[in-house]
Length: 64
Image (cartoon, rainbow, N blue to C red; front, side):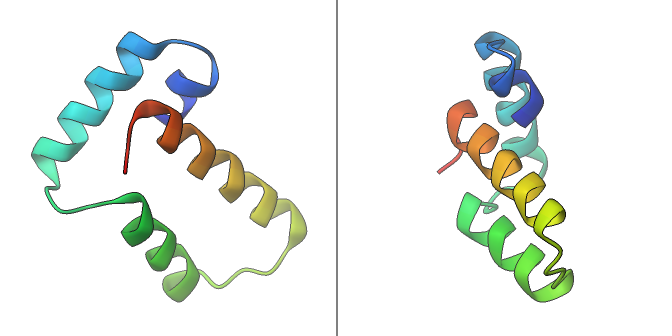
């Protein structure tokens, strides 16, 4: 859904978010960020930049 949102495909981003939310209720942007922080504590700047883009796309898709 992040990639859809980042490329301007809002309809597919919204549909993917709906599917994701139905399959994994209770997952929020904060929860996903927490999982990456705790489970994959990679401090590499390139990895962190990629994560920030992921989070940006998830927000654009409507994830709260």
